[in-house]
Length: 478
Image (cartoon, rainbow, N blue to C red; front, side):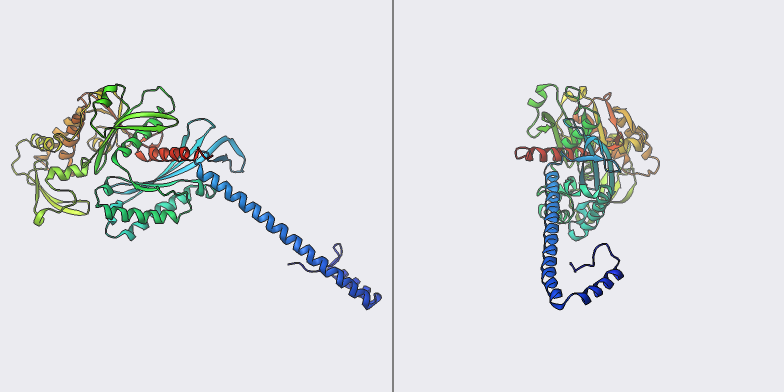
């Protein structure tokens, strides 16, 4: 508000004294004339200041709105990198992406920080990762409880990403085999609840931000990750690497064939095209639902997915130590399990049972012999468990090492208790699965959890592909 002021260059007390003297000198009609002039003039000045302030404030708000909108509609364009003092740092564009991996055993958040020089492939400069258990599918009968973990992981993203980047940062959740195995209605209720939480967040959220990832997309995303981290996507013409992933509910194989007949002879659903960085890749990729390690255990034991054993019947398997009895929980169902008594050759009996499960389930292609492959997830965990690779650093092995380890573990399981009763079964399964894919015993596989300190999961490839597709969607308009 505005008020009539004292003369501008006098202290208040002096101004008041002068005013009293002037009032004594000036007749009353002169004072009235001054009042008639001063008040309209004061009101005019106040109105002018108010209009100027409103105009300035509206212009600033409008500029901020369009800045945010521009950033949100083109995440690749990002913002200029800033130093702590706010000056431009080398002209790099900076942008973020947040990917939630809703797996069968847990939910993980990956927060990716990218930079990019104009016209070049983006560079991943930092990743923040956090995981929570159990998996989203565990809340199928109480969806409200699922929000607590999602919100906790969202808070991690808020802490990691600067405030002025929030509205331009895509937020995505991809659910994998855990939700693929749920009844459709239960899965959709969970996804809708997550979407509500996402919509209430300050991040950039599209209508397709929450979804169940089909198995092929999971394999393709993991392929993008490993080839981005090894430099194959940055250098056209450089040999790409293949990807093997063994999750709890499904297993994937993806590679870029060099021989045309590999794609021509592949069964339906084993071929897919990928667009990235203005290039098209024709990939061999397939996901085998039900052949992930946990689902395979259940099948080897003789159980059925999502169904308790009839009348609490005990599941007996030749892949467990003779005389072993215990309980095992899978997908929120507890099974009573035991090993066969008086097993003569545990590995031989187990291999026979696993072969029955895998028979005619996996397509074999000879080209895998000549492609370099990386293997992740349970491949890594099992190899580390029995000392085939360093548990922290990973390493390389040959496919036949899994069979050697399986025979040793199965033999010792016949005579002494095991800390992991499933180790004989799991190693035998992995060994035969790789053979079914077409890998010879002397084929070298690289096992790693990180490359350049970045997790080698599908999450990086998925957010990369998502942002690239956003950019392609918006480019005709921009």
